[in-house]
Image (tube, rainbow, N blue to C red; front, side, top):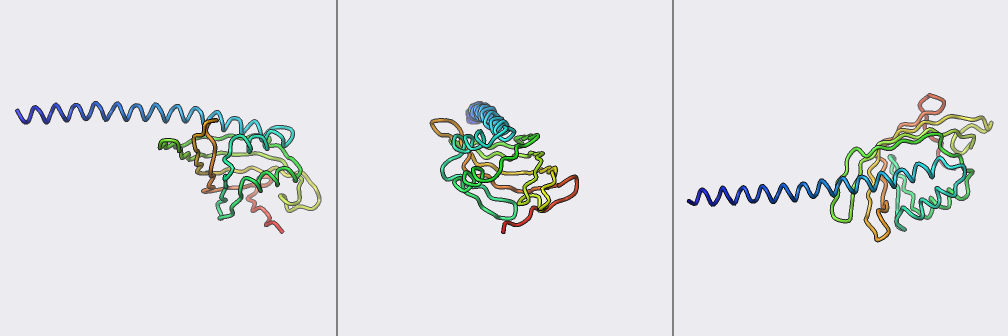
Length: 180
C-alpha cells in the first residue's frame, strides 16, 4: 500500500510540475511576443529619416539607468546615448534584422540573447575614418544579451551587453576609429 501512495504522490507531483512548467513556457512565449514588438519599434526608429523616432524609442523603451556595454568593455549610459544621437548627423539604417535566440523569464525580469545585423551608409569621418566625405557602406553583425524589466508601462531594456561584433566597411573587415 505504501508503494501505491508513493506512486500516486509521484504522479501528482509530475502533473503539477508539468502544468507549472507549461504555464512558464506560455509566459515565456507571451514575453517573447511582447519583446519582438519592442524590437520591431527599435527597427522602425532606426530606419526613420530623422533621429526623432530613435530618441523617442530611447525615452520610451529604456529604463532611466539603462547602460550598454560594448564587446571591448566600453560603457554608455542612456543619457549620453541621447546626447550623442541629438548632436551627431543622423544616418538612418538601410536595413536591420534582430532575432531572439534564447529567452529566460524570471518574474519581472527577462534575459534575451539576441543576434542581429545592421546595414548603414555613412559619410561621417568620425565613423568612417575617411576625411574625404566619401560614402561608405557598413554592415554590422552582433550578438548581445539584453536585460529587460517589466514596468507598469510595459517591458523596458535595462542593460545591453554586446558579446560579439563583426563590422565591415565596403565589404572589408573594419575596426571603428577610436574617439579622439
